[in-house]
Length: 264
Ligand code: LHQ
Image 1 (tube, helix red, strand yellow):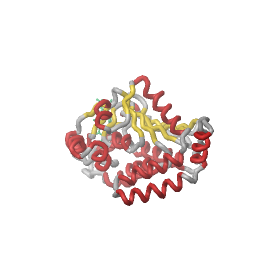
Image 2 (cartoon, helix red, strand yellow):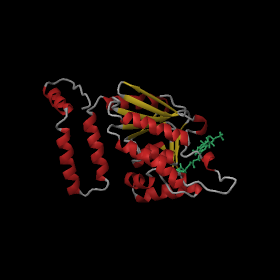
Image 3 (cartoon, helix red, strand yellow):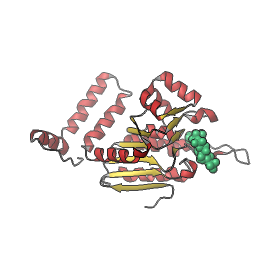
Image 4 (cartoon, helix red, strand yellow):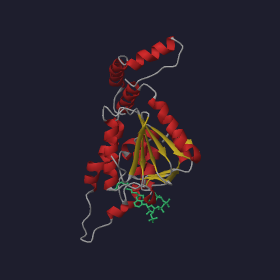
């Protein structure tokens, strides 16, 4: 399948999705949203062979959020239904990323604004170039943080910082984002591409089912109390214990050799 607004390739179990409208800082048009969705569907397909996903942006930005060029008030004064945009595109993409049964690495190569910032934060492990930044720019145009922003920000950085980020729309540098726990790590600009790919490859060689079950458990912890979470860990661990990769991990440990995981 060929795409116009994204680059998408799969090599050795790693799928790489690059947002590719660099002249507009990879801001989202309906076409790009549709292509991202299609690519995620391909990654999620049972026979895809994909064991990790790397998401990044082309050029100097990661993603400027919704393309505001599409949102100018029309000549007839009608305003677009933003709720419908969220229902049709943004929300399914965020949920698809969270529900993918494999780890998703985001390499934030430059500014991530609005829905672009929250797309990055929906990924499992977020790396950012030293020069990258995060902006909850919604408040500057009268909107509410969407694409999961109001859900993930307080969970990552606490309510005080989440509120200020959402209400002020300040630009947060990558180093600040790392210090606050908004992202995993800052990487020198010239090393981001290599280091993020290496991380995606490392994850693709790991026990994919176990990582997918871990992802499920961590996400459920956001809403579960401890007793329910303990039950969930029991159920997921039971499933993890039935995988070939668990047997391989134990055999390799006892045999004092490196494991070779198949992802099942
Ligand atoms: C853009 C954009 C952009 C168009 C850069 N649109 N052109 C909303 C509605 C509907 C439903 C769902 O949810 C949403 C969620 C949202 O995402 S709302 C938030 C939308 N995004 C923003 O408000 C951010 C707007 N962009 C900016 O504030 C700046 O461009 C940032 C801070 C991201 C980067 O600033 P600079 O580094 O100074 O770059 P720049 O502003 O010069 O941008 C470079 C080009 O990219 C420029 O085009 P031009 O033709 O003038 O060179 C920008 O117009 C274009 N661009 N973001 N969202």
